[in-house]
Image: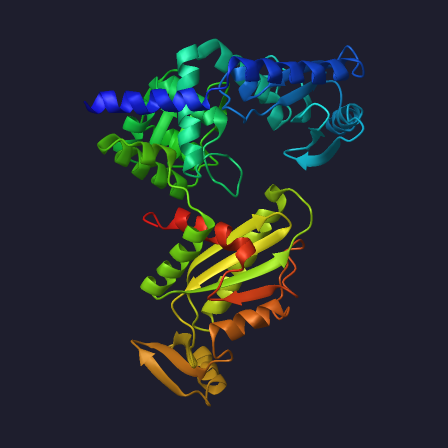
Length: 456
């Protein structure tokens, strides 16, 4: 009965998420047109090769990534292939189309071909036959495509679709730094290793750290040398590049959440768990208010403007800024239990969750009494303290707090009082909302809280 229920859920899901024959034909036609446009411009010694989920046959309905690689001879320099590749790519942008320059190891072009109804990444790279010839990180992508096409069966490709969809439903899909999730290629390798979506779940439901997977040999082991080599407790060795851990972008929190989801689905499979629980605007508002009221937490939302750059650039800066603010607040006895940075369009949203609103004093830790010079200096500096005391041989001083509330501290930050060295995150002029979330951001904030709190 259990197996039948799982089979029914997955069969119904696959029918919904697998692209129709007509959709695949349409997307294939769009790709062919992009290639034709490039062929009219690109010299014959530059090979045009399409990679990505559409070519792999693991794309989801309405969600195909199209990556077109311009493969240059290795005799050319990196700056040369980048300049030439971007110039060729720009020439296929027609009237009414648009593009932006994105960055991986080196720049590439994202084309918004509205005239074709599609967007595509056009990436300059080197043509290589094996990994020993690799000069840039993106050079290996065509080798990934070759591996997937030669090793995954049609049934396994559908199983990859199920895994991708499941991960997307639970915000665990994507290797971007701000997601910390599973890439499409990682999903393909896991299905190749274990044979099916359900088998992947069964493995992770019982897995113990460290997890080491070697798809090329299909080995599963606790190879400590590989754990040390990659400095990670979750290792999936790239079958085309033994020096790369495909699972490196997966954060430990994402891995743990996936493990819990796998256990839950194996124990009690259900449509609601497979598809994930969505929410309406009304549910977001009521759910947020109920959480704050029940937990007794206070929420501070700081919103600042960001430049129109890739999230791969702005999100790490926003994360570091939030960490700096959290550390600054802790020196004044305000502890944020949760700090969440989110990039939303051209806005940087920093969510701080705290139990403390006010703190009239703060405790300063000093040196050991047996460090004479340092302890004398500490006592001199804090001679007007509310009180000084010892904990074992360590001196402490209770000082009046400069900021009488967490709100006062964060407003100081929003006025530009805290020096921040992240060039794309301007704190001065940021807006601060206390125990309320602007309507424009309520979905984002509630969604991020749901990612952190498993039962929201």
